Image 1 (cartoon, rainbow, N blue to C red):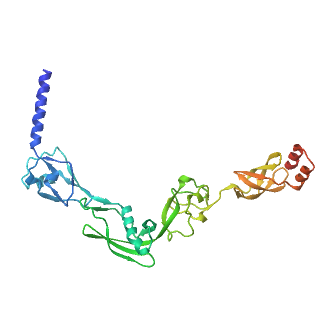
Image 2: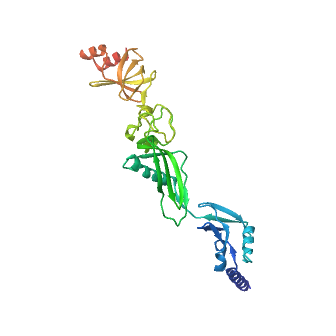
Image 3: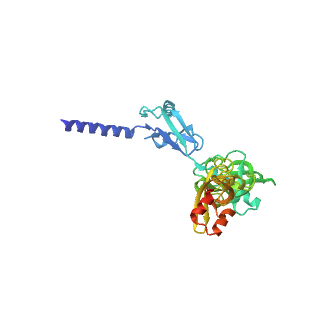
Length: 331
């Protein structure tokens, strides 16, 4: 019995598929390459003579639009395309195919067109600052032509007007162009006092006009430096924006490392000055209250290699390490 039921179901399925193969079927979505939507774009199993009939205007290049299924069916009936199977769908989506010229590609073409006028050999060294943000251009996918400049105006201040032609239409851009150079920029927003790591910076081509002051050109000059002001992501790093990080801050307690031949002694001190690695700062021994000079050797670390006269005298008279320790500590 089960075999008979399965056989009957299979026969019904085959019969249904055969009917559908001959029945016009409405598609849920379609992609068209022209400015007109034809019956054959929206309906399967339709005669070639009917398939070529245009019934709607297509969306703009690169755009997608929706048409109510009832409206599509009504347009089909007007051309005697009847009995279309819609499968209960409510909307039909239509996309106009396009070839996309990205904003980055447009910027490159502008730089290439201006570089000769600016007498800059490498277009990559032309910085383009458009008056309005560049937007992608959608063109017919069958058109392989590129943006061709038909008019270029460039004045002494760098202001430009350039008109490109593509697909028998003109596209106009205006802005300012100037010579660009490798510039260190931050890859994320940073705060004052942050130490620049390799992942925090990158090299980008930037216009000399857009930066007040002298920007850093080499990442090695930025890595390990501390910011003297906050910077936004993408902002150039100028020489005045960075300084060597202070490893010792004024007023903080530091470790004083006394170094003399054969003796190493560590005591606590108070920093009278702030300093970066290698700076000479004044440090007061918290026990003896005497102030000496030392070299910043690490975070909270100062190395003192010259002793006070009292210590020098003690060493000259062959004082023992215990005596030196007592003298340095102020005992």
